[in-house]
Length: 306
Image 1 (cartoon, rainbow, N blue to C red):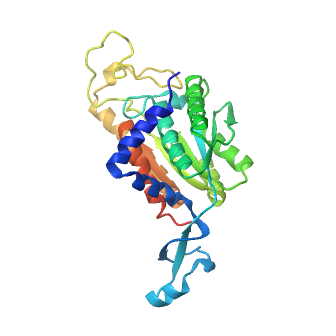
Image 2 (cartoon, rainbow, N blue to C red; image 1 turned 90 degrees about the horizontal axis):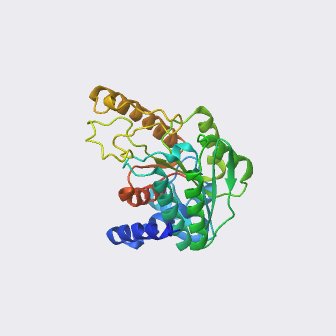
Image 3 (tube, one colour; image 1 turned 60 degrees about the vertical axis):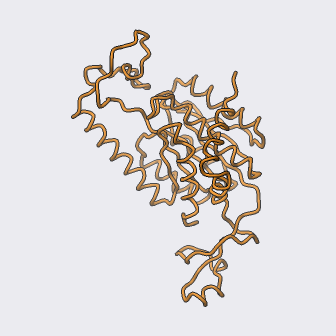
């Protein structure tokens, strides 16, 4: 089997040449703010900050309270919580397998973790059960992790169950970790919110949404190639296997209605995650994914720590 990590490295290298490796490393380092003796920067005091973090000299000089931030010097563990149920067998927004987008996201963040001396582990599953891999500290372990995701999605026969993944973490993971949830764009539930509130107390949580392909296209597809596998013609729900009638493709009213419903779901999810101070990024295309991940990590430095 060809390496899954090699193409990830290629995309990471291409983006590194555009933005510089230092930018990628600096964005990843923003995850690691914590208590240590290594000074990082100052920012305005916010409700919930520790009194011991206040820089009294700078506060007196500026006339308003400011706190010191430092870079944590200890090793961190990045926990990838990846949905590998039927929802992940669908196409992503760029008409490529959603599974490949998930592998790219985990691969990029896993490589950055290794480059900073951190380790990682994987939790994946569906409605039939959740599985956990041991902690990895090498590229070989990361390759194995990516292959685990690849095989699990290929063999998926049960519906996705995002809440089962979150519940498993809440019940079994006691040590503080950086939890990266990789899921599809299904609407969040009240149970999802309850679990996230619990997880947010103990862990640093990041949320990656993999956008689905459009079920109804804005224009009618062209003539079939005869292969029967043209994604522009065969629009099928992965859970029910119900095929969307081809005559619906290109219906502007239906496409607009679906876009509006999708936008409402996205807005609800983003509002919830923002309220919980969970950094979020949607990934729609493989070609843009590394840049989107970089912006997510960079935005993380502006999130208040609870």
